[in-house]
Amino acid sequence: MSQAFAALQAFLLKSSGLSLDKEKKYLVEARLTPVIEQAGLSDLGELVTMIETDRTLAKKVTEAMTVNETFFFRDRQPFDGFRNAILPELLKHRSRQRKIRIWSAACSTGQEPYSLAMIVDEEARNLAGWTVDIVATDIAETVLKKAKDGVYTHFEAQRGLPAQHLVRYFTKRKDNWVISQHIRSRVDFRQQNLMADFSALGQFDVIFCRNVLIYFAPDQKRDVLNRMAQRLSPDGFLVLGAAESVIGYSSEFKPHSDNRVILTRRAATPQHEPLRTGASLEQARAAK
Image (cartoon, rainbow, N blue to C red; front, side, top):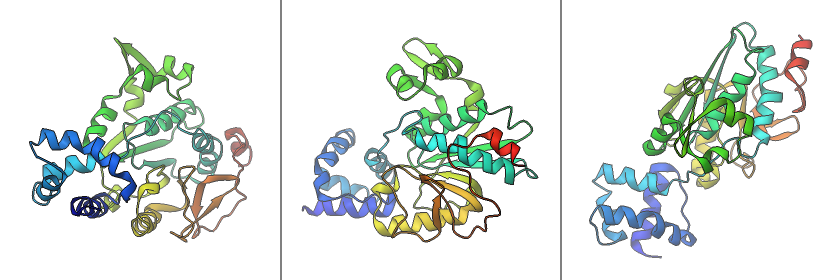
């Protein structure tokens, strides 16, 4: 393994938590060659030397190596769980506050928080009089700009998005689809590195942190999970990706009901039986 590649590994681990193994050399070449050329540098060795003092270039390297794969309602199960399990429980146990805060961590180009916003909009009748805040963060400012703009290609818009949602929440603009201002206004996008202190974001009832920790080194994964536990209300929910688990990394969470990607805080003292993911909002209201 070259000295330059080892230096890049150390930089990415410290700056973003990304664990880059030696088998990913092809990925480094594909993603960083344009950065090297644009900066007028000769090779990876010169690049890793420059990022020690050039913060702008360091940010470009981090953003180039960050995985930004996403699409609307990705994997579906977490969103069904949000609608059919999480929302009913929050409706019961936030009846005094009538406020719900959701964090979409590592939101990439915005499809995840916008998917959540569409569900909240569809459940408007059940949430009448409630405030639902959706905070969406990502380390990369370039993808955050795209997320804020809410403009997607036809491929991006139709990928995972039911046809009725496309008609209801998007407007065609030439070859692109623009998400409605009504849905955009529901999401507060902010730049945030998960390796940095995120306590200023406040407390949340739901945290979606999907398909990002899988790329983190073990120590970084433990650190982020345990700090997220502190940002989650005692009876709140953490939603992970299908290939992710807290086992061996954090003892702060436990599985919720039969939906394995939804977790709750172990510190919570439940005063009710958890609803199964097939439960409905109507069942939740009837249980009051």
